[in-house]
Image 1 (cartoon, helix red, strand yellow):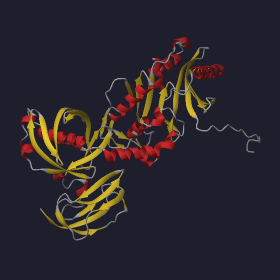
Image 2 (tube, rainbow, N blue to C red):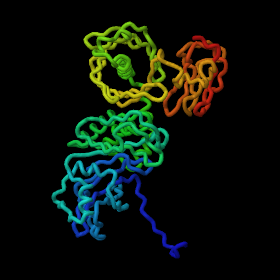
Image 3 (tube, rainbow, N blue to C red):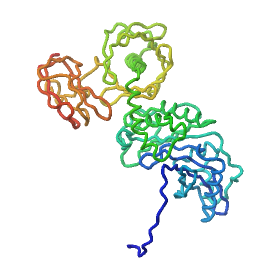
Image 4 (tube, rainbow, N blue to C red):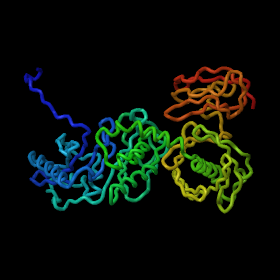
Length: 476
């Protein structure tokens, strides 16, 4: 053999193991303690995405044994600093040493929330030569904490990173949360670094309460402009097997397809009218707030405007503004009469009432003229068709209207062609639909014209700025 030794080292294979680690502190003077365990079995691509403490898997006896084993290991090497001893635990609750991480872990906040100790501070004190300030008998677990790692990645594409420009960043505001983030406002996520954006940690007196708080916080977390794993994490926390602690390191591999199907089903069954209501309130606010002392008294255009069509997630809705009464906007959305009331709007976060039911929405605008509206954790794209202009993606012309060439706004797949050569079209007619990044992008006629040539067919993959269709005989 290459090393001059033919010995083969064989490790035991453990089926469906759990990954459980123990936090330790040592001062190099013989003073060592553990601060209990963290359950880290939920992983994708062999990287943790959810951690919690305490582990619901461990019995009190096993918890004590694993803590003692971690301390003994550190004692044998005279360990000095914060560190983590990682174990695999099999179905019979036997545990096996995996490795030691001689540093503060990403998931250290869950330990801090349940023990009350600042691990970073303790590590720095030890590094400065101070003796360990905590005794083992002083360390207790209080309640339950769960951490969700927020990544710029696309779960539907195998969790590939999704760098790009964040157009809206808004953190949840509920109590019992801790958010450690690299951002505090919209920014660009670069492709040169790990795609983790932040860590959301929720605490509760019980595991169920911590899970509920974490799931609600994810619903109220808004990151627009890139793909993230927020909705994936939200669905994962609500998965029956996760709630029942029927997990292993293979949990994500076994359930991701199901979770993605559930996300798609949730999108397809969602009532869009609350999100449309938020968009309409935002549109009303944007058009009339500037220079108006009382927005609700200056509604001339909206009160008397003609009906208009609105596109939301590729569907067309007819909007009929009716009246304002006592600060409320009355509209009919595709035949359904609704009463809308904006309570507040700041930094993309809107609190409003839809038919007297309170909602929170997050609203931003993308580079293609669409508005991104998030309600109840789901993100929707919408635009008023009467406000389409030549700068929008669905009406991008190479040299203006006279040229007549319309291009794909991004790489994607042609999934629908609604016209044929020779057809007359009007302003706002949806000509072609291109699917990109799991979103449908409508290529819309910028004016009255005739379809002269269609350059693609359904199923074609197109690049950014691929010429899709040519229109002729424009009329103003």
